[in-house]
Image (cartoon, rainbow, N blue to C red):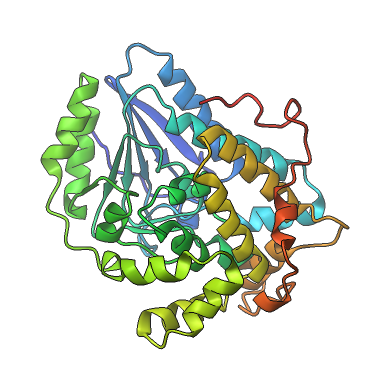
Length: 372
């Protein structure tokens, strides 16, 4: 049985390969040239396969992995297809709205999946990649894993359920990760509750092979547990007191003021990172995580859909920080975004609240059908 992801060919290939191996479904994200970034085809393919296998009594569980290509970094999924976001937003393409609605419904499906869903989170797992892995029953990391929700860097916020799962990190780590986009490696991710086990990357092909041979759901858990190795101490947890001190402040301006008043290395490095991000979207991200602490997943995803609508359909027309951030990072690559407003001090009192006003009634909301 060949369980190795196949190299990309010259001919167009499906963005997701859905294969049945005995009693286990295997999903392979198959855009290695784009670090397996999600497009609408991928979201729809994942959703269709998962729904079919959920209803199939012959399937006992599902394994998710990412294809790789020589010369490219290892990745489960680097996020959404930012070039598509930019192009579709400028063209007024309705597929952009469809993408977010269907992606969030997929995230909810994964969190509530009735069978064991095993995410092999090897390499880069960011943004949308977190959305399709954080709901897994088993989140398997390697020493190459690099997890992050870096959306504030491109004028967005931690969506795909990010508000919900970041809000459930210990203390104020969720706020810190949402605003800073800090990259977590395996020990930090597990300490934050964003991963379950650590496996040597060299052992992952064999682990996948064994998982695909499982005959019962409980075997998937036993197979993963048998491959796990000891997790080193988390460097981020050593900074927990500082994270909680600064990121428990009541609003973004006071978080920044607290960091400026601290001459220590952690505070100054964090301040430097935040200084590159969209001020408005950091304020939105902070509010999102704090609202999400008291919300169920379905309501939180509906809230994210409201916020995302305002990111790409700003009140008064024009373009917001999302298009500007993607332009600067991905399109022109000048890395000099012109944020509006340009500084935290220029954000009007409570201005971030407008992003949370739903453009839909509860009955007409595109995610109205989601239930917990």
